[in-house]
Length: 188
Image (tube, rainbow, N blue to C red):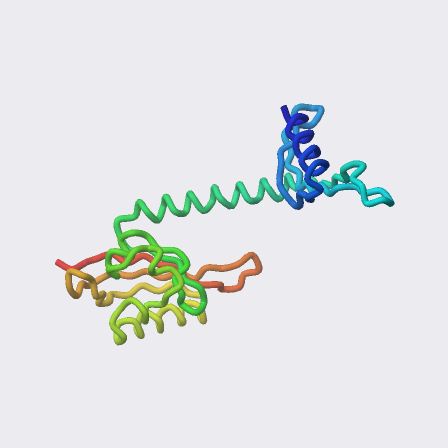
């Protein structure tokens, strides 16, 4: 079945004269394992500029494909955790821009998740509150230490008191690349 696919691609290049460049395709090895190839095919021309064949080039990108699959799995797991927390949860970069949030965070802001991504608290909350949130984020990034605080949060239902935890996020070299946090409504 794969041979038919390869032949079809070859014939298309032969008949159209149009190269087919940098596409991914599976291949089964003689041992029965599946690998992934990044393939390009171009028409091969003679001195009279006539198509006489197809020149095919490929690179084994199986490791890259596996890494992409693992990254997707990880993101889906993170999303599942975030979406199942009953309290506000987020990840921010070192400039306090939202990279990932859950639905309770978006609901508290009165926006959708997509509308919040890339924004800071200054874009989503009243300025005085947002300045306090931002100062806390920057201190966590600067110090590399966790914090917890009780703070006011403006929501569509009015001002609420929240218990908030913020933690630095580190890269593979131990450098702080942002913050993550959760915030639970403790208003009674």
